Image (cartoon, rainbow, N blue to C red; front, side, top):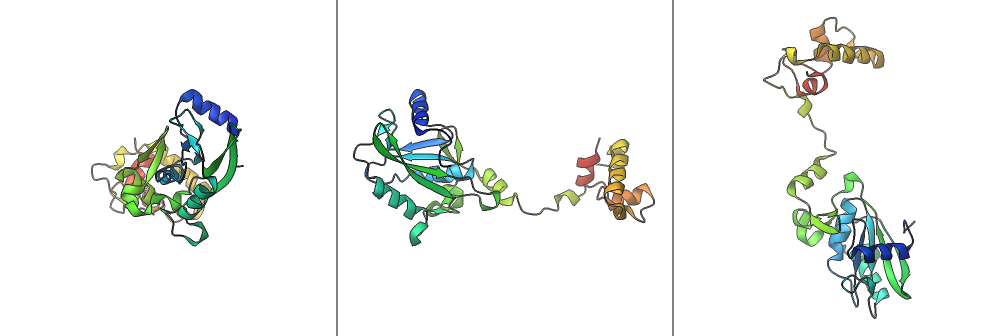
Length: 227
């Protein structure tokens, strides 16, 4: 379903606020598609999705744009997002839906942008590159994503062996005995063969990735059983 609530209620809310909000962005787009619409497409795709209303003028109180060229603007959006054989303005273009709506008796174009799956993020403006062309939605603003946020997105699904690193300052005395016993008991119940042949506590800690064979405490062990 393209709209979560009636269009009239959405426009009424925006008029009361006097501004867009976290899930709705309007663009006047009288004769052509606004260039900054792609920042909003990126922001909605990278955050929680949202609705873009084209042909509505925020500066004049959220009234329909005079002589709105809805067919031309529609074709420019479809072309820019990469449908119809055209090169996309944005990389990792999100799924979207289009429809026509009516405000004060005049037509507007409704574009629902869906959030991308984590593995497909970030959506970004291709000409600017991922570092300068990736946006997120914060209230009514499209904010450029920071390098740290981009790194987090791009590495979220990458396997990491960080839990196997040794914490040099830690010793087995930093492990909670009750928690260790609970972990061992649960693993015996869940997967008995994991501890088969590990007849001492030291061997069990090694087998469960809590310590190394030399007795050094791993990050995984400290996080799961540390005092």
